[in-house]
Length: 317
Image (cartoon, rainbow, N blue to C red; front, top):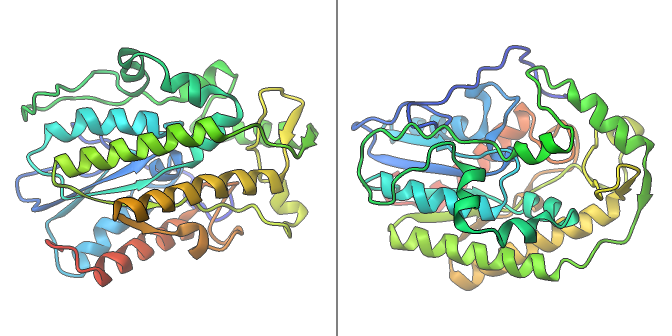
């Protein structure tokens, strides 16, 4: 994993099951970082993840009572993020800001046709994919102990196990290297409609709770000039057939489509958007695989969010 220095990275959840510091009464400004694995930062040491660096950055520019809770979870699409926020937001008197890095899992699961399938499931089943213990929607403030279940159940069913050392990456990368590469994406129109609807519902939830929301587009390492060494780090683009993977140009085309739809919704709904796809270079300076940030990538993401918040003079910061 280029750019990941720690061989004994710490992953620590607080008493609410959220990756982050314990939330206390002294915290006057509360932030939730939402998304999938690129928010969760599974293999990055706690203090080097972009949500934790963001918390440190905001404390250093004036608000020492800021708390950033990381509720990103591997495999969660906006279908899961919507469930997260629906049940988590009532647990707190006030969440001031939601930062959502979304779109990649919606795209990746669309390639396997599971995005549409999961979205059509009854809410009870969706809840079961997100939470081990479902928080109450009544808004009581008792400790909820909700340690979330990773949607990695989906990946485990496919034979992928995320071990503590990350050595499963070797097998995942080799599968792509051995596969036939195909260029034509499936029809993504229905998935994009669902993605748009989920985004609108997430924005509605934030507005109902008087929480400001800022979305981030998903950047990536894919580009036309990747070296062989960089190509060997890739493992996404699975078609559902272990012998076939989508090409780099196809993956760029597909994810750009989801990022574009996200930007369109943000403009239409007049909510903040930071275009990380445009602002982060596609190389191993910032990524250790297709889309996951290394330590420098996390610093870059946190820095861009900090700069945006400072420039836009967010109340409370």
